[in-house]
Length: 185
Image 1 (cartoon, helix red, strand yellow):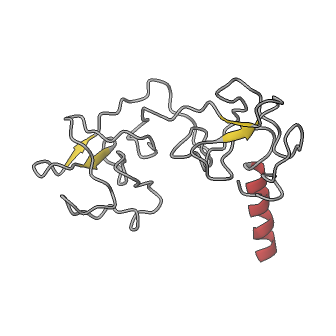
Image 2 (cartoon, helix red, strand yellow):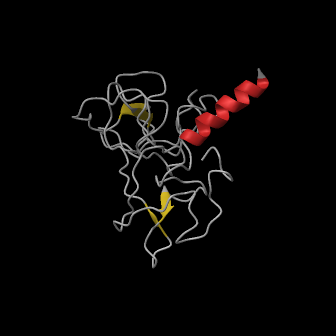
């Protein structure tokens, strides 16, 4: 059973990893990137838009808004001042409670945060609802969040409109970020 589990995990990672020429972030850069097919440009960051709206109640919102609808600045999730609370990155590790970004870790009506004001403990955030239909639920991220480490979409064009080089190819640029070296990236 252990061998089968490893095999299934390996197949799962490779399918969503450094295949084709899709933008990825295997080296933990500031955003997903790729080697380009342009001789003069070895690599470039990719054209990915961070989600700046939320669907449903925003439990999957991972944008960088940090101001409430009433103009309060959000308190960092890893801080207990000025307001102590239970929603810490340690207690809720799968809810992306990073920095002071608006989140919805417990299914409220929409994303919210604790504020830095002594007079207002928490407030809903000033994030618009997405106007398009909610995407179907998929097990991988197709929009960029944070630095894009979990991005698994199929964009293969850089900010400079250059086509990405296939991760398994070594031309025109030689590199070590191959599917074999980084099977889960």
